[in-house]
Length: 188
Length: 188
Image 1 (cartoon, each protein chain N blue to C red):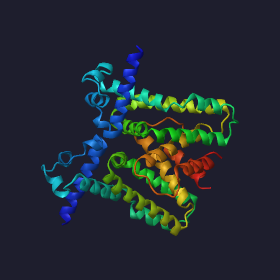
Image 2 (tube, one colour):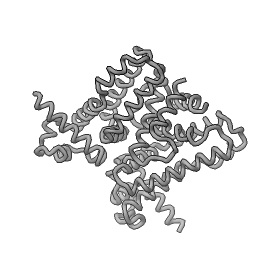
Image 3 (spheres, each protein chain N blue to C red):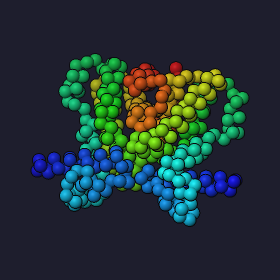
Image 4 (cartoon, chains in turn blue, purple):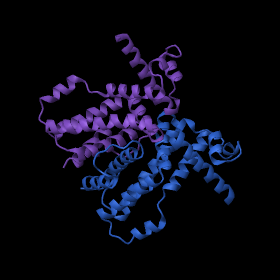
């Protein structure tokens, strides 16, 4: 069973790589097997349909974006102020930047969602749950900002990451400086 | 010659449709001819390489996003205040939303730029020029906000449009309300 889970994760990681490197249309069971180095038929054995495969990718993206528990625990001792909020954002952006395949795969899936309702449903449910969890976490921890501010940060950080990972504008702002500006302005 | 230009635009419009509906990997000369209803070989006659085709798409996207001169002229008589700035933003978002193929094609090209340096160069130069023009226009017209604010709006509106055109989060904010919040907070 553990071995099966490892294989599932390895296949999903290969799918993320295919998405990032070839785009959504390149994502086939055969391409996943080729990227994972598994015998042809393995990916379709684990994920019979393309929608199953995409659900598995979404789950795996969620796992790869989960913050390190030690980092989270270290923050529990700090006062829930703007500085802590800014550190959370910087940590999200650091994780997204360090793992560009995951971020690019997620952007690919979002564009694919505009074309395929089944993907819109899977991805939409996952993003909506993550958003509600963010809002609840902020409420529970006493961090500044409510639902509106968190929505604005979602939009802002998405746009910033899309720029940063593709053909970045030269705006005179580093990524960290842009985050600091957004925190200063969105959290009033 | 006029007829040639018309044909070029029609082919580029077909390419934009292919990008939006099939993703970047679906963009081939053959797919463009099929979408435009032109005999096979027409698109490669006008745009010999895939990079030529993509340059033509970028130019055409720029044309389709250019604001109506009457709308711009009507604004010339208004004081350059926050309300006018907000109207400009709402107009950009209105144009992007009314023509989702253009916006989706542009997002596809941005992801393709992460994979192909030639596209990063074409698209990057075009976006950088548009950004500098925005900054200069703001300076000349006396609208509030400088380079930093315009950069923040670029990121924020990109993220908002990506959300709006794909599988939108339910954040409790309409697109117009999100724009109003960004204007209130970014322009201080």
